[in-house]
View 1 (cartoon, rainbow, N blue to C red):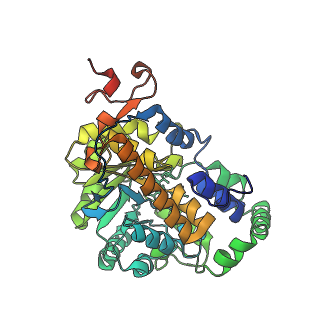
View 2 (spheres, protein in one colour):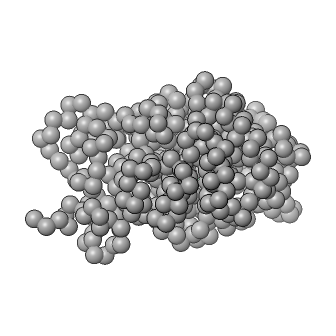
Length: 406
Ligand SMILES: Cc1cc2nc3c(=O)[nH]c(=O)nc-3n(C[C@H](O)[C@H](O)[C@H](O)COP(=O)(O)O)c2cc1C
């Protein structure tokens, strides 16, 4: 990095800073994916398989990036994705994410496995957030969590369906994040010593490091191993669409089903009453070698039509990626790693700045696409980078521009 590049701007700039700041096992936890990380790479790289279409002389004097997400006004088609243990990457991290999201006017999603409880996050802004839920074997705990979320003022539930079991994140084994043997413990201790700033600000001043939303039901809330044992025992691998129907009956607010990659699953979600789906492979942390989420988006958006909202996450790294997803049929996108890198690398101001850059990229991109409103960003504004015959994109229902007969 040049001596004169003093201001971090892009996700990559913040990633480099986060790497210097965080203990290695925490950086690997946010940065890595499952197995050989093939899907993690495809999520990012496959955005390059699509190209935006430049239009000119369109009067773009009134560009407005605003839209509606899950029934609420948002300043752009973007939300912060749920990230477990976000509060380990910066002091009380979930509150920093929620404040930054609120400052620019987009939704923040709290994970079931967040460090801060929902009440603490909502108190940081006084505004509703989205809450992400995993199904637990003990349905009474689920019911209690839903009641708690409802009482706290949460309007949108994001139910994650792609974690029947946790994926094989090999970095977590290698660096000692998972493992209680002596080598793991010594390695982790050494990593902490190499990260004195993090150790002081988050390791010591950021306590308690409990999983806030579950601290009342886990036997020893100060022991992360007890949490892991609880999660291993409680994450329910037997969940089916019937359980979502049960959930739908219980939850009065908006329900988004996160983690579908196939048309059939997306339709099943809509059929049990979901208000939206999130096309997602969990950021490449679950089934490695599954396709990128952007490559699956168009077919799912076409199949769902206007019956429910369609979101996408995985690999979104700038405002133009957001526009590509919207052009292919998404109502909005979520970002996971980007806001964590920005927070670890630059604190709450880092998230503020990154989100501001996203919005400026979206606004500039819209002007250069020749549109003033988000609902004008559609398939007419996107094409394949390569010959369409080489890709199975599922785009047939609305042919891409350069495949049209002239
Ligand atoms: C470290 C980490 C923890 C995550 N924890 C959760 C979680 O608790 N619940 C969930 O639904 N998704 C979780 N996700 C997935 C994100 O919500 C999102 O799908 C993914 O990060 C999107 O990909 P991106 O990081 O490329 O933006 C996590 C992702 C990461 C990287």
